[in-house]
Image (cartoon, rainbow, N blue to C red; front, side):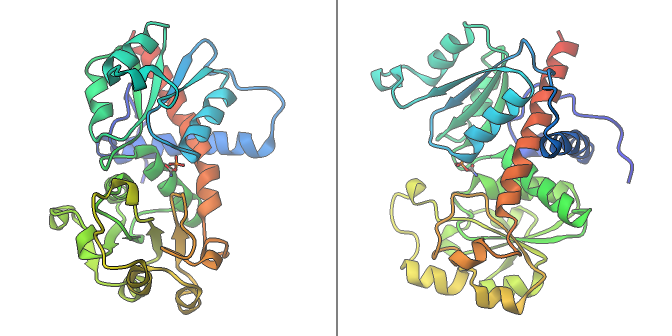
Length: 314
Ligand code: CP
């Protein structure tokens, strides 16, 4: 299918705001950067020269923060990182005041990670800089879903018609919500599988199939996207025991031997021995480190297109 050039967004808040044309346009840009990173061309890219990018992280991160940092620097942006730990947030400064003060230092693009669902949306309507959502509470993690789909696109050529089952703690997962949006927009068939207590109340309205255990899921799926249990977002134990979770929903090498063509995604961080066996994470069927590599290219493409849109819309 041919797609018209697209992607006129100044902000990225939710995966649901992206059309198939937007996603394919982003992928075509990301492919250029993937090749650039692999070839290690001497000449730096200067598309973001003079653009100030702030990485505002109010919640811990390894992959997303480093990936945006590397992506912005590879395009010659001026990059600064704000971390809530050690900042004046501990003195009671609000999110909005914090960001307005950062913005007063002439910021163009603000990459926001925050524990509250809706934080990125809230800021978008109140600040001048472009807001890129790097994960807000249980709500959305759009660049994670884009890099997941881009990894599959590079591995199997087309996401359309692919059967992808998201496995584990769906309730607390912004990754699951964003993946469902992006994958369905691209024409994939999507399923979820996890304990009933870790399913969103309205899961029947998400347009996905549902499987009761990992065996059923693997019989159906081309790809499993395995999620960790997000204990930091639980007020109380929502499943009887870790052993029971592993028995019904954990992915083992036995499973992979039975289903040698199933690909394994995981957004990280991994809890080895819980949602998947350590050998599964390192097996040839695992695309986990490939996801991380593709993430830099996706974030380069996003930063570049958002900066372009800001210039065009000034
Ligand atoms: N996948 C992901 O968002 O990882 P981090 O929390 O390390 O950024």
